[in-house]
Length: 253
Image 1 (cartoon, helix red, strand yellow):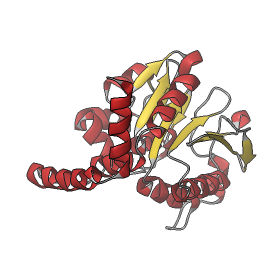
Image 2: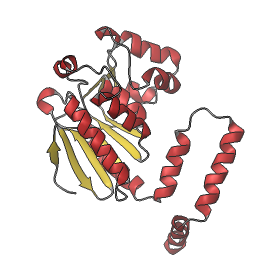
Image 3: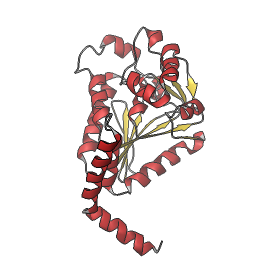
Image 4: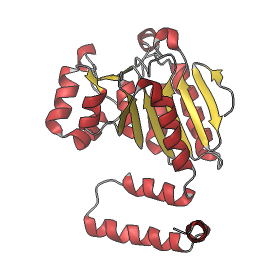
């Protein structure tokens, strides 16, 4: 694992095919500034273009995921147009084709929760706390959370979380499907890195194609069956498949 490099409040650590991005502003509970959004956007674009990166792992430093937007920065430069740093970050996050994993410890407020809806897997420490306080700030939710959260949790539970804006714990996050696994705080980093490494070691094209299929918008079952068959057919001709089969027989299983 390479040493962490901090640029504009974002820490970068490379671990083989895993790029670990950490919110690195613990004195401010990792509150996100425009510069941090710009740094994250650049990091995701670089990861997308780097064939050596298979998985991006997002976490927070200092016992906190993120307290959400830095309100002073937000008020000084509100996101009034499509070129605002937060908007460009969200567009990049939504379009990101590789695997995104989040490891959440402590508070995950506002966008700290909504960005998780775009991750492929979320691991949470037992002390994780999520909150969507947009209405309390006289705002509306962002990051397509009004679309994605009802799909995930059901309309009534999504309405409860978004309208009341009350904090909820990791167990509740697991119950509604936001969180894949809840682990002890001391185990979170190792558990998230283990998942990232295991996915990064799998056949790249198959992993990316599977994510692409999972992320497809509404489609009838017959159409999805046929699309999966076509992708399956392409993978049957791949070097990855030949390598996987050879490894299977060499293992003797």
